[in-house]
Length: 385
Image 1 (cartoon, helix red, strand yellow):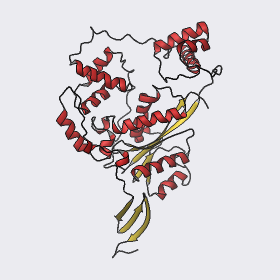
Image 2 (image 1 turned 135 degrees about the vertical axis):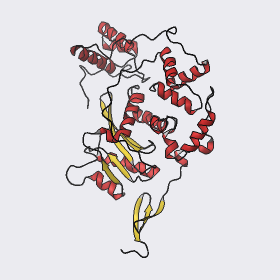
Image 3 (image 1 turned 120 degrees about the vertical axis):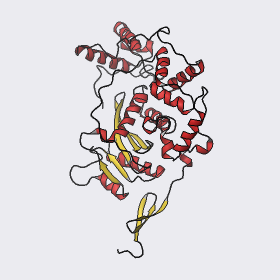
Image 4 (image 1 turned 60 degrees about the horizontal axis):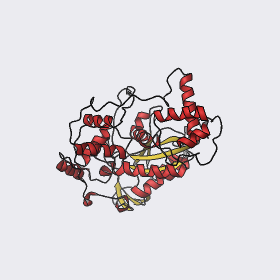
């Protein structure tokens, strides 16, 4: 299953895959394409280390751009990096080294994200200065963003698991289309569940939600778009019946209005920018392993602008945000990174207490919950059945 067909099927062999899983710059792509014109794709792949499949894809992108009358974006030579004489950075060398270390460990981060990561460990370096440092070392600012749509009403759940959002992101690994299911806690932006599949089916969505409930507990409500796996236009769909069995309220976004599910859509863009667009996955299993690592870093290490800029989603989800903020403020102002989370403030997933048995009182009814399911409802004494 593929977006487009290659002019010929690349020969599988020593150079049919890129073992390093690296991304090539526009300048490197242009050189490899020129080499392919002179020697042929197979020999160019053998010399450069790029896969034959990638060279065919770059060639097709260049041909489409030329046919459209614009410069080929895949092979266009980037603007030269500003010289050190043109940019002056007046910060200690130690801070510059820390900025570059964060950026090189997270090449998808922009200047503002790098600045927030440093602030979390007690080092202050404003976004403007970080941008200057990164530009000295090859950072190219992204293209100007399209104007934002008109203002929409913002909302945020008041506590963890009051509301979760769910969406599906699809992308390609060579000629195979994969689907990434994400369940995001609206209050903390913590990813409580995810799954990678080769088909976008309702059964897969249900499996992801059940795993999320097993690990972190049952949400009170779930927000999704009106996609076919989540919503039936006539009657009650299977996903609705599944949520009803757990007593989870299903809320639907307005038709053709992705802003309603904006939080999970933002995570989709982040993983696309920071991982999927930067790594050439070798297979389904390779993609699954690398996404697992990204999700763990997103939950526990990556600061989030939507929750204050220096907190990570786990801080809010596990209820330690105030203590973390106090620790960060006490460490701020230095040039040496410090750990803002002593051991007593750290909570690993495996150590988190999960309520398996609960008694709830709702509108005069006592409810008995076990493993996220309501197993009995009993009227309180003095109330009518």
